[in-house]
Image (cartoon, rainbow, N blue to C red):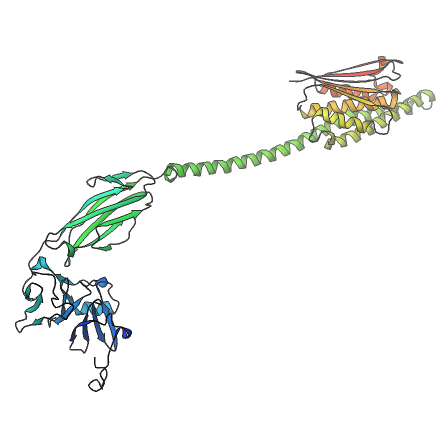
Length: 503
């Protein structure tokens, strides 16, 4: 090839290193615009233009990569002799492909079905072939079985477009009826569509395009492939369409509709159920939180009521009694000092008892002995504290099966036991104290006994004698719907027994 202004003087040799598709050159043709068309063996059609090579191969749409002759018909088309027949391609189409405006060539191909006696149009292969155009416009090409003549200006015979049809549709290896739409089970993984077009004279020239509505946005070129596979289709409605094209004539398409059924968690009712469940969960969490807040408020309110009750039952009555005694002292002070002194001593006892009850009411705000414990274990633990600093042993005896009791019952029974043990330690002079707790099926029994000096119980429940602790124990027992019995003999000890009914 001569290159540049000094082409006549400086011949240049071009090889694959310069951009040629193949070094085996079979044909050369120079265009009026200076472009050189090069037919190669194994490299298809090449063109040298503006100092650069461009190649066109079978992968780009040509009939074959073995081009033995290139002929220009003077009407904008190149005719190529190949080992598979004769190929006609428009030069403008080649320029558009080289410029990137199109991505596939669509030449017209001629073979045995079009009248050639042989598709081998390079009879001298591997040597160069031949061919020429005569003054009347006819094209002459040698073949392995004689000379072929083509008249480009002759009207092409009208041919019906190929008729395309679906041959087989399978889903996970199972054949489907192509004549009816199908509903597929959830999770169907593999679909295969087998189709073909009826064109007996040249079936290899048929080109196919397909698309799957519901998945593909546009038509997809399948070339000459007749089987298409799809995997892992989501639930939904689909329609597979395929059409066939022959020399620019497109057939009517055929289709197959099917539906992939959703899994249960893909159905609308399941989504609504999930939404309803979530809403119910949120509402339940809100109600639970509201219940907790109300419960806390109820506990605070109940504690306030309890404190009010304690103050009314103990401190208020004690202060009223103290006030009455002081008034009696004021009346008797000038007339009878001995009686006045008796009233003053009683007022002092009442004040001391009210102070004790006040401290207990404050301690009841947080009953540490009962925290995370039942009554038997709390009683055993508290007894060690009550007897601390005293040499008198306190024996604890518990019978029955321990169980969780109402908080009010545990609280009051523990306070009754505390009062009874404290009285025995302070006033009885006992050598031993026994605490017996019996947890029966329908009743709770508490018995506190000592071997101390005892006393006369005739007036023990009279406030005038200052036995406020015993009065408080009876009031606590009655508050629980129970009974308190006290028995004592001078010199024979004392026994306090409380019986509380259990629901």
